[in-house]
Each structure stands twice: as structure tokens, then as C-alpha cells.
Image 1: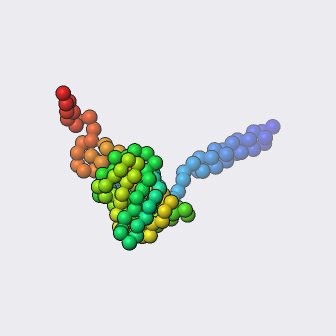
Image 2 (image 1 turned 120 degrees about the vertical axis):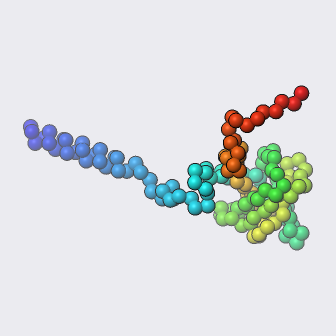
Image 3 (image 1 turned 60 degrees about the vertical axis):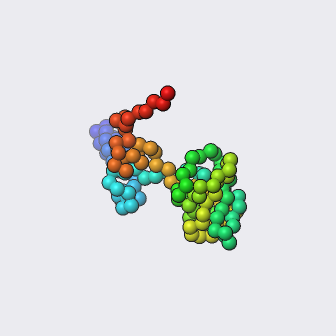
Length: 144
């Protein structure tokens, strides 16, 4: 009877050790991101839309936006082809009409149908990165 309890105790201890050691993941999360400053949260990639027209000879594209986004002129965008590989870099130009956004081709070879994404940083993170507080200490203006 005592031998059975020792085997049971050893089995239980082994299970706990195996379960506890399998909880940690290794990989990129263990390495600090060299591009981001200490304590900064990386930007999130959000979809902008798909390339509707590509005019390589005139160095611009027309993006059919999947949602109404306020994208400031000068914002950098990334273009991904069907295989999920980045095919081009764009920079938003001031012209916009409804759901269509124009952008200049900075590099690469975009194709009609390629997906366009942008880096999004939450306003609080952007203010903190710029040196502001970004929190509730900001002054609120009421327009009457």
C-alpha cells in the first residue's frame, strides 16, 4: 500500500513539473524590440482597403477604403500581395473623394487588388511618444 502512495505522489509531482514548465512561450516576445523605445507599445496594423487603380507611370494609386478613416496626408502605408508579402510602400496624398484615397508610390510594385494597411497608434500612446501626457491631464476645450 505504501508503494502505491509513493508512486502516486511521484506521478503527481511529475505532472505538476511538466505542466508548469510548458506555460512559458519563447520567441520574439522574449527579445526587446530594438526599434521601439523602452516602455512603448508597438503600433497596431489596421486595414485601409484594396488598390483599385495603379498608375505606375504617374507614380500614384487609388485605394478603395473599406471604412471611413481619417488618414492624414503624409501617412505611410504598406501594401501586401496575395501571398501576404509586402509589395510596396505608399504615402497618402491630400486628394480624397468619398471612399477613395490617393497615395504616391514610395517604393515597390503595387498591383490592383493588393491589400493596404497602416500603422495605428492609439492617441494616448502617440501623445506619450511625443512627450505629452496623453492622459486625463489634457486640457478640454468646450466650443459654444
